[in-house]
Image (cartoon, rainbow, N blue to C red; front, side, top):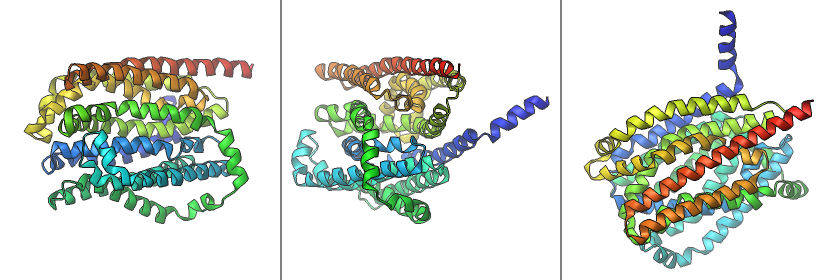
Length: 432
């Protein structure tokens, strides 16, 4: 009995358990805030307002990737903080350059909006460079905080950003600034959240302002695989994830995109709530274990088994209730959003399993092979969407997109398991 008690005590006192609990708590609260306001927002804003927001975020999300060249992921990898600081500064340099280049495209806002047959986008395109800069700075700070195990600071940003985002959206909605209210909130809330984060952690951020050109050049070269392979992979991944919005908007309009975008939001907010928390803690822990040549297989076995046993019965129940539940939650005009989520369930299940461990290709410096999976994913999704465009059937496009996504991510999971097995074999040989 004492042995069992000691095991339980060690588990709950373990650093990874504490850090995971912190991140899960903050993510749960911040994502819950975002979800709880949607029944209000869907009664203040029209589907095409959400369609515009989704289009803006899709374009911005792709450009943000270039703004750090994926160097922010490398911040947690070096053993020495000085090297991590250099990586941060390299990423910030990219952030400034890309944000400025994006600013130079503002005069061409109307031409860019015409590409998507969404003229209203041109009125708010000037917000994009600001969005790029703010998002990039947070990406860098996020992984610096992760490296320093400052999970309370990450959680504080998430909570303040989510609360500010919800509050400003509701405020703009009631103020009848519905045309650009969702977009203004997307800029204002991270700006204020970053300002709060800086004011609370300024002293601990001082090392980031000590510039060393030689160290930056060395760090940029050593971790060049991130812009070489991780960046193209991330661009392809982000592009493929946003294909329905980017490709289907010109053919079916912002209203249909608004319904599907809402489905993506409602489906992936709970997933992101869990996976992003686990991703950061798992990434930091796995990096430490690999540096110490420790076994990682038992942990991943438990994670995959327990997650599978949890999501299967849950998704089966949701399949039968989602349409009615969505209509009750968002309003009677939003029923088809629930239908889209039902179609997405196999894709969502695979994403839940894979998203928290997708850093493995970075840990084992297998970014090139990871990029090949992203290419396969975007090809599968393009074929699915193309079929729907050919028959001018929005529903068919979404079905093809989701099936292609689920199949490729399944094979990606198999590949991650092979990376773990290969590491365990090599680790055993080194120990012998």
